[in-house]
Length: 421
Image 1 (cartoon, one colour):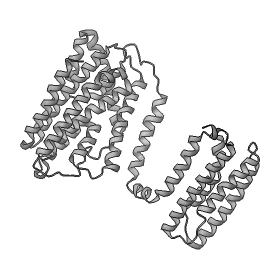
Image 2 (cartoon, rainbow, N blue to C red):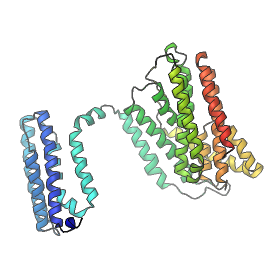
Image 3 (cartoon, helix red, strand yellow):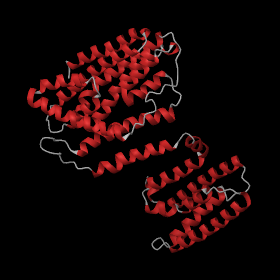
Image 4 (cartoon, one colour):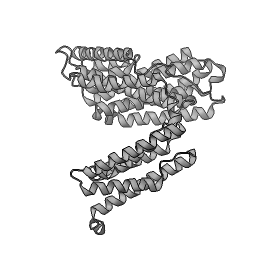
């Protein structure tokens, strides 16, 4: 370390610029060799010399940067001439080599003026982007206009609307703020959107279990209903019961994630019980898969083509959040903490996310942490009961035994865990 400290900073920066310029040039050579392009701007030596030129012109006058700027202007003109003749002679319109050359020239001021990690990050990013051109093209073909519209909606919901909302309570009778309501919408929408992206781009042709896991992140109730209906098809019975149980395991993971986002104390209280339930669910899923005599079936659409960021869905979620907040305040004032347990069991037959997020944010109710964790677990028990009923009513007769076994284990273990929260 002492030896390194005695090495001049300019020498270290020169070596960094030279090495990164050479790596970028080598990556360009590989790209050119693969494409067998007729008109080449340059490869390893050219890009290394561009980097060294930028270093020389910068250190001459690092304050005014006049030589560097003049050199950059001349380099840009030369690159423009190259690009013009390339278009005229070969009809190749790509600007990648030109832009990469300008980035290489700009490495020196970047290294001197920014933290080392920033310079390294940009250099590595350039190399990676050059290397994965074909992969990026294949990935881009999966996008449709709807995908960009969905992404735009997410930006609007999370990045534009949320910061504009007030964090002050709406009124004394409505002790929740618009910011709290919308923050809950953003959190749940983000998880649903993440599940949507995984399903569409990472696991587009996944089997029942993977689809169920991703669907459980989106909504374990919706997944249960879809899979139960699919079980009516003769070839789709085998993996349906473990798929339904797997989706419910993801419900615990989703709730745990929301708890960590909104109330770490509650999350730590729920961590061990929910991990136990997730592990037990995994054991049940693996056991049922092993004992299943039917082949798997792929291409389930758990969200049935729904946009996970529909404004109508967000509005309904916000109204439910406000309603459950008012209802919980009324129950606490009228019936005390015992009434919250009953309310949690009743709410469990509906969408439990708005209710539990209301508890996690503690919108003026001052509910003890232990009680919040207790009522959350009660809501999941009720939700599992209604999902089991959905599966039994909508599903084929052959899946009923495994569905009853799986959900019964969830429910019994949850009841036992209530004693320790």
